Length: 228
Ligand SMILES: Nc1nc2c(c(=O)[nH]1)N(C=O)[C@@H](CNc1ccc(C(=O)N[C@@H](CCC(=O)O)C(=O)O)cc1)CN2
Ligand SMILES: Nc1ncnc2c1ncn2[C@@H]1O[C@H](COP(=O)(O)OP(=O)(O)OP(=O)(O)O)[C@@H](O)[C@H]1O
View 1 (cartoon, helix red, strand yellow):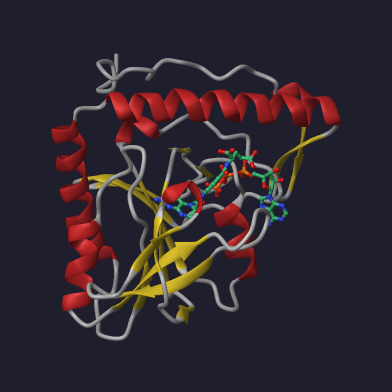
View 2 (cartoon, rainbow, N blue to C red):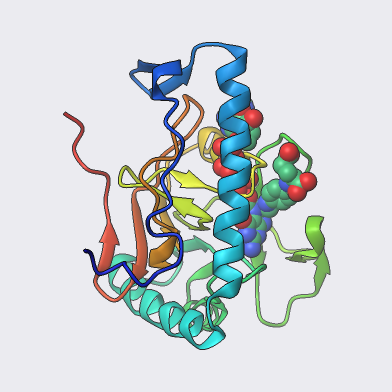
């Protein structure tokens, strides 16, 4: 028995197709097209399960976790004027960190939001201010209409799922992986979500870039385990 017993999906185990994968320095890589297709199907099903679970989590519970995560972020992030932090405008039950985002602005940090420029291209980060005009981007996600483009020191990334090595499962566009691969200097990357989004492994592929740390509540901080 574990403390997660009452959480939906805690025992759902992923299909084992590890035998179809080969290990590379970057993790497990699909050795053939069929395994790649299986992995893509598994990720799609896992995303749907995790998003449904998140949406089924009580609004109060999500708000409580968001407040706890914001308090932990205040300790993890070197909150000082001028620091550039990228956040996100919450959709589909993602943790609402907008109050923390506003507090960063009030404390003199520069806040940015991600903008999808095109499919299969890195995101760009556009400056957000409380008075700035917003418009709708892909998936109707609100984005700053005319903020300047910034290079973040810290990137907050909402997870759909995550594993013990801090690999992230997102919505399947590959945007954060492409974006982090393209950054001129590596930002501190912090994944945030509900504790119930933890899964055994996302079967990381060579393109998957792990988060530096994942925060899911008060004292709930996951850093990559040392690989043996
Ligand atoms: N709040 C929030 N904003 C965010 C992100 C996020 O995760 N959360 N993003 C984090 O990346 C970016 C948007 N991510 C997106 C990821 C996928 C698709 C998309 O169209 N997905 C396809 C399925 C994948 C495919 O096969 O290409 C679809 O739904 O049809 C759109 C936006 C930028 N803004
Ligand atoms: N750096 C990259 N270069 C080329 N292709 C990439 C890169 N990163 C990801 N991809 C491709 O993007 C697709 C989606 O990747 P993945 O399943 O990791 O998305 P995700 O991390 O869940 O999505 P998101 O970051 O948008 O929330 C995959 O087909 C993958 O091959």
